[in-house]
Length: 122
Image (cartoon, rainbow, N blue to C red; front, side):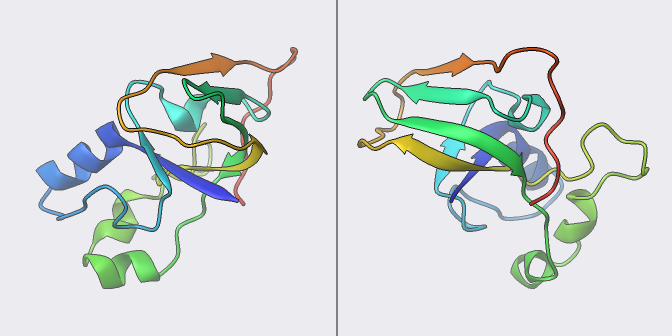
């Protein structure tokens, strides 16, 4: 499995006083501009190198997040059970095609056939 977090989420936590950096929460890949948590389950990501990842679900945060920075766990869980995205700590995926992923390379998203379904916690 591969864990991905959006850089925008890290910046959000930093602005609230949590010293999160890329890789701090165990993620393997940090992306920018993709709104990861709102992509449908089964979305394929193709990196410039040709590597591909299939998005499978939302990462469910655990108490370890608060050990990293007190109060951060609260920010990773939506306030309401009706929330479209219940967890805000990135997504999980599986590698479809191996390859080296380099900082700054492009990423193409390929959506699954409709009807799309939201990712659920993993």
